[in-house]
Length: 194
Image (cartoon, rainbow, N blue to C red; front, side, top):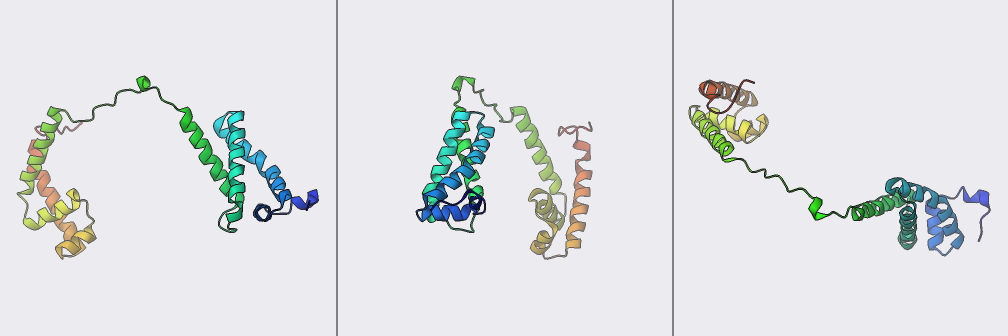
């Protein structure tokens, strides 16, 4: 059943796909004529190669025809589904293009800390541990939960069975006490004021 040209414009893509799935070849022709320029244009913009864009457009439409019998109207627009397929096909082709010459790949940088850095970090951790030992048990627990474990004040309040305000007070007093204990060791621990 061939539709007049002006009627073709009125039929939604989803309806054409269902008509094709039910054996109407003119529906496939109309949908192909409607979609091919858009699909090709999208693929060409992404790939920058006409031949590859034509291959992608053809592959995308072939996939559309294969899924036509299983198409579930209302889940996605035909154009949305088709552009997603084109995007994935283009991505695959771009990845294949990037065949990498192993000699061109730089050696990965060694991100292992130097011995001096590890010693400095160890000294800092020891100093912090000693300073934490000067706090009251509750201050130490609040400071560790907040600033080392990264928990929020409401969670700490629940753990310690105290109010959020009490947590805020304990952590504030604990931080001040730590700063006072560690103040004279800034240079030794590698902290500068610059």
